[in-house]
Length: 228
Ligand SMILES: Nc1ncnc2c1ncn2[C@@H]1O[C@H](COP(=O)(O)OP(=O)(O)O)[C@@H](O)[C@H]1O
Ligand SMILES: [Mg+2]
Image (cartoon, rainbow, N blue to C red; front, side):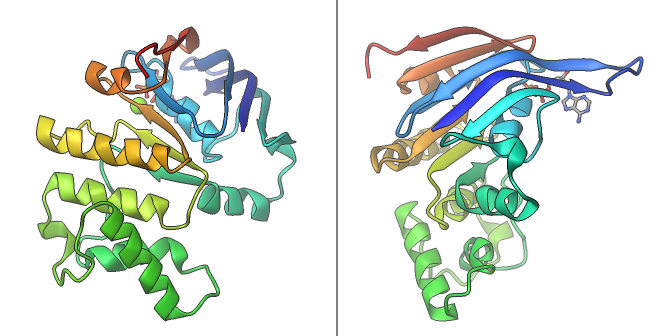
């Protein structure tokens, strides 16, 4: 479980371009939840997600993962959490263009001491779960945007993380591909993983059990969706 307590994040503190991106944000997310985070551009959504992913640290406040204060994590524990507890999906997939989808998905497993065959088997399974043929002998760059986003979801889940964090994963996609990506995220959640998805799309937010609205660095609404 994820627990943010009075989190503040200030960029360029004390300078004339100081920006309070998060102001006293408190948020609990239980295991297995499907949460949408909505709000205008510049509201602080990505800043919030980066802190949750342990890619950034708060200026003040406490962030607990399963009851442990992340401020006390050693660098190796933080690395382990980033790589194994969270899977991150971004708007632009950041794939290595000139290698195959399978080779992209196997990358997060390279730190794993398990044998090569097992790594490739797990990567192939992750690709199959997002509907991409793991035998594709093409450069990732030739895939469509929707396919590349699905490869990036496979890459995010290959380590079997507890939580998927998706920052506007459908932002660059048309309706059909967007629906496909959301279906995959819903399935990942049905498997028992926590999914937190930042989105501008009301259709996507409507499919989530909980909708958190961020405005000007604050959570101004946190609603359960009655339909789900
Ligand atoms: N690294 C940074 N340095 C300075 N300001 C930043 C940085 N990251 C984000 N900001 C500012 O913090 C605010 C929130 O940004 P962000 O979390 O990216 O918003 P959102 O994802 O909701 O669009 C914005 O005003 C943005 O310009
Ligand atoms: Mg953002």
